[in-house]
Length: 328
Ligand code: DGY
Image (cartoon, rainbow, N blue to C red; front, side):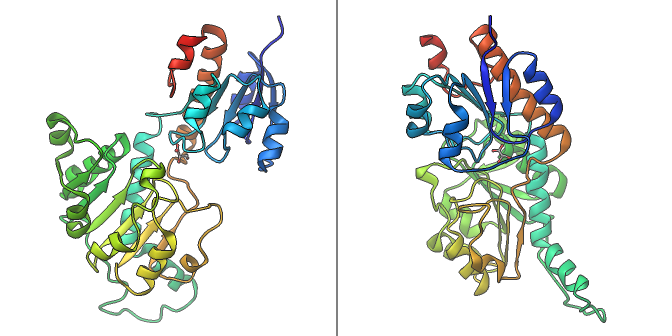
């Protein structure tokens, strides 16, 4: 019997390609051509499955043009690149990579918080530019992390990881807002108290965004929300571009309406709002929160496992629309 045909949409670890080749007829993009929807549709012709990443949009148009497609395995926990309703309607299974990246991503959220509060990137740029000539009492004074109030918007696994780091490691008071409140045991574990979104924005010294992107969370942080924050507060976004109105944020940073921001994700990335590049009080990183070698490898293997299980056993480890499996 011939092997199912899959397309790997972006360059990934060679050992994962080798593993996939044991089960599938693999066409891969190891030259990492990123491209248009037309190119994706062309590459998916005749394919039974796809190994995708967060930048590969699978929507009704793609599905209609690729009728053989049965599964898209995303190498990301976020899946806003999938039109899940359209995939379910077309009988295409969607999978993601939760859990394996939780602690690594929480580490990074905390690193970005620290870098932002303590002005690490800004002061390094100053030093590299040869501007450091003497010690000054107020040079790059930032805000304290220990003992401050940490506000987390979105309290899933990664949010909880950040809460624990803040509460247990840095003696922070942790408050959070989420669509649904955590149960009492989880709240106690995270030492986190539930508050309204407005109260969180008004009272937190450091606000970290870890909520999923959806039309409902589009511009969840815009000019009005930034206006609620303390002028000394910092904002960190490791969730998704589009959750923050980047134009409004650049303005708030320029006018020092908040102290600083740390951003790993951007609206329309990899392009950035040009104003973000002109303000000094922002730390900018290129969507690397899950980027350690062991974690990225674990994500790639989990996406591969989902493809293998699907074609060999009609199941998946981390399905997003398991109803598709029942109907097959
Ligand atoms: C995720 O897993 O959603 C990350 O943003 C991708 O690195």
